[in-house]
Length: 309
Image (spheres, one colour):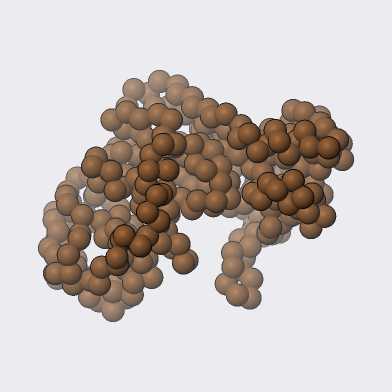
């Protein structure tokens, strides 16, 4: 299936690779230079038709569905993050016929939206063989580390199922205050997603929330900071960040849940980032079924801050 690239009406027949996807996600994938909010607008207005009928954004596509896409205003892609595709491609740490794994830099979103023209997924779809690529999971914009993308529908379904069932072992590194008193600490507090007055997403500890559990191990303690390993057993939004903040030792450089005084120490060292890094994932390969582990090195900025005087 070719990506939409001209301002004309298009008719698309859903193939087996796209069967089961949400309509909105399908359109976002193939219409690469159109903002997300415009995609949702044309769906709401009924300008996108499936089998000649209006459909909601969450409609699940079926094999041989006929999708009509109206003429769209194409953005000038030359103005959008000229160097980003090359930067992202240079961070690929593993690739086969089913998986593409990236060491995501801090500060880059995994996908576009909310004022971000493009993220990791949009950049990688610009590759010659990048037509089918879907995120198997997500990382916060300011979190670095292992990010897995699926190269076909079968791989995506397998990975999503493993994440839902808690089969995937995820490990992170983070920096917190040197006052951290534990060698080993389990945080088990329910998390509730809320929104602040301006619409910004915010997660709080609340008994009405979803259960969430994280295991922390002390790796190294220095004068100002401690290096921890975090293993979340559930996959809640902002889980590690909120659990650490609730314990009283927020992630260094976390502007949302962090400590102002600790963040000033980070800024003093000219290390403007959030110090949370997805270091490894362990799962069953979606094709072979064999145990597969991928790990990436700790960014040098972690050691620089950890050893600062």
